[in-house]
Image (tube, rainbow, N blue to C red; front, side, top):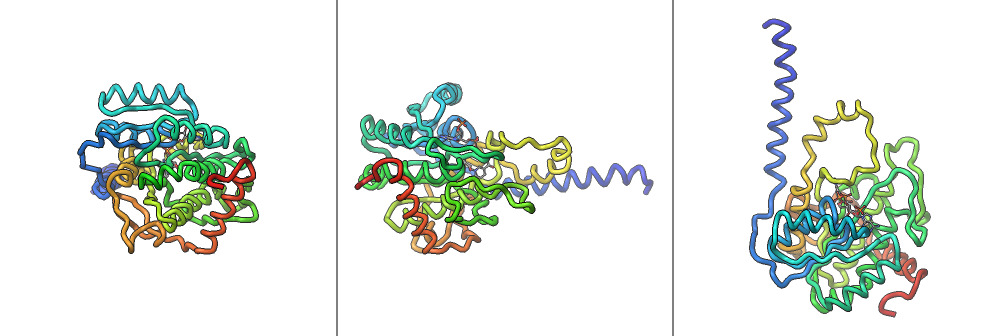
Length: 328
Ligand SMILES: NC(=O)c1ccc[n+]([C@@H]2O[C@H](COP(=O)([O-])OP(=O)(O)OC[C@H]3O[C@@H](n4cnc5c(N)ncnc54)[C@H](OP(=O)(O)O)[C@@H]3O)[C@@H](O)[C@H]2O)c1
């Protein structure tokens, strides 16, 4: 075989191999096939103006559900509704302002839900972000902890009467990153911690995703119908704070392409948890199970009940520092 032919065959072979692996992976990711009507059901989705929250809102509306888009920017929420309406006229889409980086906004949002709707069927704690430089919430918590954990924690506490009365479901959008060197650092809870010299990123995102899981475990133990999931690596606005160099694209694009799901594909895990997943005695957040690829999977994280209970107590204490503790 001539060397020129080899130069062509090797990249073509590698490309074809990656393509086949990608297609095999896609088969495992799974789609929610159920199209039954969700008329009369109401879903609240935090961070629904883009990415996974947006796709979830669109899919639930297409099945005639009422969806509250809980977003921090009302212009973006309205634009999202317009975009969903270009695809379906079904369901009801209601924008309500919610900035999870502000306790005042969270309290206002919960009061609005109670006053205007009284009941709902499912709360989807989806909003999230990952940033590279320090950012803080209004109450001065670094944003991964403040928005993804404490903001959602306060929201659930404020809505808990409605949730329990109606046996409403709570869906927690975590990530497999909770398994990757994440820890609950009680000495620095809510503080910005610079990444270590050997870390490529700071661990604050991973830590917050572990807190999401711990939150779900405690909620499950307290009798809530709660479901945790990882959507997989998805092509959304999530990476807006990352600025890869051009050569990173060249080096990593083929590998990323093996794993990267569309936002519609990633949202399937959220839709599945919101409408279909069933917890059992063996498989639930307290036994370390979460949904990925539309299946209950055991987490590799070593959960600790003492940490779980302590995080709950410290979270209640933190929200109590900035106003009355709900229910007291
Ligand atoms: N994409 C992935 O690969 C991936 C993988 C695993 C887990 N996840 C998780 O999936 C969830 C959704 O992420 P995504 O990929 O859809 O990202 P995205 O496209 O960036 O969407 C994130 C949403 O969260 C909202 N948000 C951020 N801060 C907020 C705040 N303070 N108050 C209210 N809303 C806020 C954003 O609103 P704005 O548009 O106004 O900023 C946006 O609507 C996150 O919890 C993320 O951790 C994502």
